[in-house]
Length: 100
Image 1: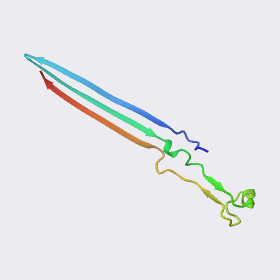
Image 2: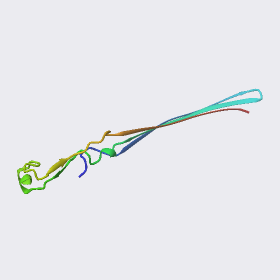
Image 3: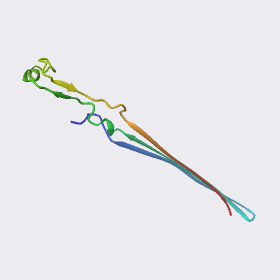
């Protein structure tokens, strides 16, 4: 059984691109920038970890609904992720300049 929380990936991208050109006499000077920022949030790491598992080794424990009331080794286990969502950030930045 999966956790009741919504899980999945969400991605966003921000981008800035700009070019500049300036001519003077025999020269044409050009410069530019390309900046890209990717943001990815992954919440699938918490899938199935909120709901626990009960193991009954005795029918009395099952009927009463108490874990290990008869000391037969019935147990309840549940795990929690260290992070509910993993955030990844990828940045790319480039510049150029030239003179013709």
